[in-house]
Length: 357
Image (cartoon, rainbow, N blue to C red; front, side, top):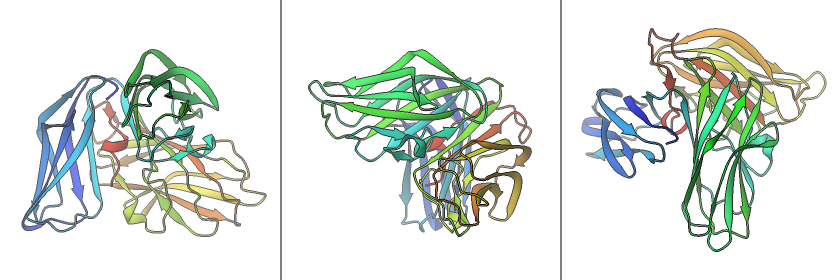
């Protein structure tokens, strides 16, 4: 956790009910211990929200969501979950499950890991500031070895950086901050020195928007959509792949308003060829937030207010025209909480507490 915050309103939605006399209990964990923020979904129910409890975190705490079955419940299918943060900024989380033994570039909100920077970059949909970088490894680098985490902007390193070396497994940078503007391309680099021990990497950063109430969904996907068929992905590319099955690649936000959508391909599509990316609701409705990337690597954008209610499921659709050159995508979606669903909540937590698994 990159900031001190109270988490409330844990909301869980399952695709399939547990069954009679069976249940799932989901609990927010802090530093490996259960908090009081939890929900149980039983019998024929498929959703629940904890409106009573609060989980308080300080910067540097670890956070996990635990699922415990009771009575051998039916496979839940895709699970959707989110919580509300009281922080003035938006915490963003990343977990690289693969060992990092050479320099890699990591998306700020997804499993987009690549040795090629442009494949994991996200496009910022608004202005703001990044700060409070916290990093952790599952194993110490050892000896003189190290792994260095650096926020990069438009292909260049920024002042927001920290190194984990020797016998250490954690470090942070709470001194520096980085101002960004809409269309900037962000990525986290994990560089290695002196052959560190193999380990998985975890990091978090705090994004503070210039406009109060703004939050972001950031997409950096190390996978190409089809050049001939319509495909779908999560709005935060959380599983880093494109698929023909839309219903398995959606997220639930809550009562917010989607306001802007930016998209960029890292390779030009070719003359008279393009990709059109569209924000979709409930696997049935294409919204006005749609952009076409035609033979350019410049970020394209569109603006429209798309109200999202607490049960709406959101996905991104990719439609190729003219067999475009295959390409990775860098995207960003601006979400405003103050305008959505009548709520005054300022911020949402993203990544591990937002997307379905």
